[in-house]
Amino acid sequence: MKILVVDDEAWMRRTLSVMLQKWGHEVIEAADGEDAWTRLQHEPIGMAICDWVMPRLSGLELCHRLRAAGFSHYVYLILLTGKDQTEDIYTAFDAGADDFINKPVNAKELQVRIKAGERVLQLEQALKTKNAELSRVNEALQASQAHVQRDLDAAAAVQRSLLPASSETGLPLRLAWAMAPAEQLAGDIFNFFRLDEHHLALYLIDVSGHGVPAAMFSVHLTQLLSPHPGTSGTASLPPPTAPHPAVTVSSGQATARSAPQEALTDPVAVVTRLNQGFQVHDRNMIYCTMVYAVIDTHTGKGSLCQAGHPYPLLYRREGRVETLGGGGLPVGLIADADYEAVDFQLQPGDRLLLYSDGVTECFAPDRSPFGLERLAETLRLARGASLDEAIDQIQEALERWRRPANGESPTLADDISMLAAELDAPQSSR
Image: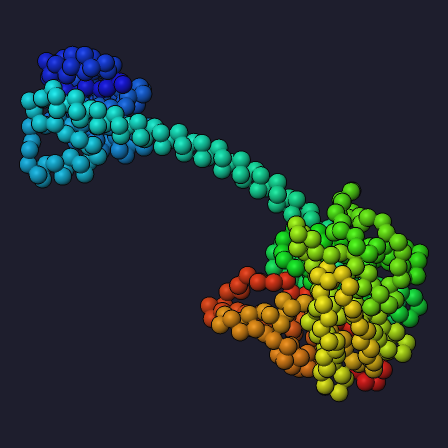
């Protein structure tokens, strides 16, 4: 080890140097504190043995300057002193000295204290090496995280592109919606599409779990439920007993595995085919709840199929709110599950609301849920507002419900999604 010996008396420097060289150390000598300071700045010195009282710059002052300099490596400093008062010892350690030896120097004592200093320096070097390695690992993790984040951003953009872009359908039916994912990627998905010149289909799906697996499955389902261009209500629904298919992405577009054509006009047939085609397997516990509905916009007659999903709400123009459906089993749990159609009648001004359980199970700070009754009441209170405004009012009510006393908005526990439809009312009634 390279040791700096600092003393204004040449004989003392020489005595210490002989002992240190005998023990295998490389020795550099300095006649005073200023000379020592110059050498410390220009040479990789790990330890200094320094006299306390010296001209120009004392050992104590050298301690202060050394500790304030912030060198990239640690210098272990031993003070030589004839002082032996407790107050002097405190002063030395407070200045930054690591150890001290009383004069005259005892060779054995000096050797022991140097070995103790070496252990400290070895630990410091090992820590420095580990910190450098941790820094490299952290940089690699940050680069990997940035790559994952870019992928998530791209996936989220694809998922958002599958949500409705416009409420215009050319049919006498108003539509409004809202989506608030709990994470960057959502397990909820919804959409609507025109089946023919007077029928509209709409659905809302809630895939179990969160994150990438749920989002990929939701993307695949919405691809399957999208009617083929130029066809009348047909899509590539899966054949019975098909495993969960992979979703491939090519040129930014998610593509579903091809399957036999199936009409999208019968809600029970659609849900049944999805359930038969996507059964839970040991290594893939993904399933979903959903509501699929078809509305005749000329007559107001509608039919829906509920698969383990929260009860759709039907707001009547006069202010009454009804629940639709009887529950049903989620899609993907039981292959031979039976599903039922629920028929309903919309009058002009009536509103149908589909929503995920993230709405009714939105928790207040005291862990009480928003609940079905409160949702129905919020829908009722929005009777004079437009459909878009009604959805906004529900969102605001949910935000107020979950906001703590400090006013901060907590992280969502589950995706919140809503899709509402309203049969156009006569102009005179609006």
